[in-house]
Image (cartoon, rainbow, N blue to C red):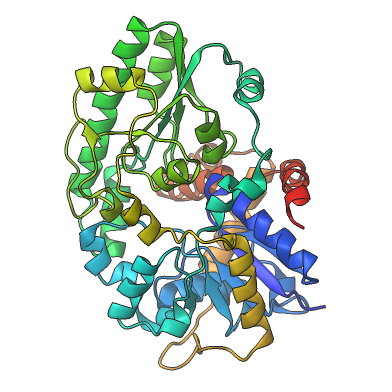
Length: 437
């Protein structure tokens, strides 16, 4: 029997909670829904008897993405909706070709969190029917309708071995490039058509100085505790581990959603994450830590003219400040994150239902696009998932061939980061279900 919706995801902590909310709402309406990771094994059923009527992607920038995310997973599917998880861009990125979609990606339905993103896409050649405004689903959990959804500070602290009676500081990191090798930065630059070398250096310097601030502050304020929240694309690193060993009140925690930590924290710090909008929708405030300037071509436009903390003395004062003013103007936040009386997950479900019931708005597989099956990737994913199931790291299995070991280990690392157990999925669903009525 055909599947109604297949939803693809990339990062668990960024996407899965919102996808389950959307899935439960679609199932409540009588539809069948499955969630599949981008680097999961390709499954025969999705291109045969269980081929989805609508494919819902996490990103869809160009023809190669259509080929990789759509054709190589389900064959030809002319109803493609992109949840478009990367919408907070720099001014340069907003004007560049990559983030404004190219080729037949413009024929997919590219959802927009707010009107400013829709206007940008239309200015770069997209038709309004293909870039509807839905709001941002992840913000729904912070609405009054979801009161009681999050754990209290006391519950969260007890779960992770923190002291609920001490002030809880939260740092939301975005240092994804700091842990990249030179080769990875080079490959990303070639793919995106933009040189990320300088920005990778800014990541590393900003991270080093920020950690130095934390080190000094936590030494001078031993009765306070700071949770460092890694970005989904950020790998473990020695500097973080060393600081955690040196300061017992410094905690690196990747579990649970960033929204959960935002609702529980007494004070919040951020670098350049789009999670600043979640702080806003949680009706809390935060401080933006910028020990060094960020190149404008990489700094999200939402941060333009924001208030920054640029040295340690300012940071120490900010850490002690209660109820600070929000560092970004309301009009900018709500221009990028549409705020209406109707939750975004209902608006998104309405859109998906409309796409499902009607003829395709456009044809992502129209000429001159020519899909092709990537046999090498198919075989590589089968092999890597087999090693992951057996808990055999490729660097040990392919020790005799470093290039092969490095290639397989990188894919293995992405698979490992994107894994979520069935038990965790069931627990998350059970927690969300009472709010879907």
